[in-house]
Image (cartoon, rainbow, N blue to C red; front, side, top):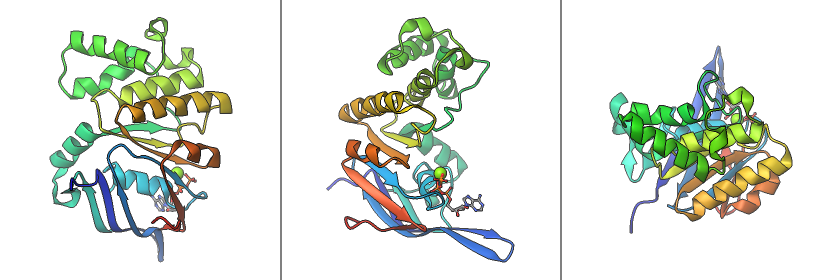
Length: 228
Ligand SMILES: Nc1ncnc2c1ncn2[C@@H]1O[C@H](COP(=O)(O)OP(=O)(O)OP(=O)(O)O)[C@@H](O)[C@H]1O
Ligand SMILES: [Mg+2]
């Protein structure tokens, strides 16, 4: 049996604020297979973003283990963590997080610069990725403030795909979009999933659950649905 692409084993993430301890995650066990489309739901403060940050190796647990393709990330140094993120994970955020002074194309090229891809290859791939994200070439030279919210999110998705990550993580990707635009962004994530990418989406919106084959529900830092 191959390893699950992601495993969280008895994950706790405790924040200490003065005398108070906040158990943002309180003993989470999940296993995600390659090709899954997962939604993570739960009310505000239930630990969704904290969990996504664990999966994305942006933050380390207070206790428990995170395994990516069977690799225990607590065994890695900073360079190892950076490499595992860069090679495995693309991030999409609610606020798009594009660099305002760069064009759409340049935003998509950014992660490729960090990966040492030369200029010509980068530019060509950025255009291909924008096209894959259903943004036509005429927008490639636009800056983020010259694009609609939905178009900006498409640029952000293209950027997340820059290094061909097997895992896409999205924290409320439709949170700043109207429902129709949000739906088209979800359709795009579905297409990417059907092409083989493992997709994990945090959302407040129960309608988005229909896109997923696995739904994880969090409450007070614990998973409470029956499948888990
Ligand atoms: N850096 C931090 N320091 C202290 N407490 C934190 C920190 N980050 C998160 N928390 C707390 O951990 C809990 C879980 O937060 P988290 O951001 O994961 O929730 P969420 O489910 O993503 O909520 P939302 O839907 O509002 O984004 C909350 O009680 C939050 O206040
Ligand atoms: Mg959150």
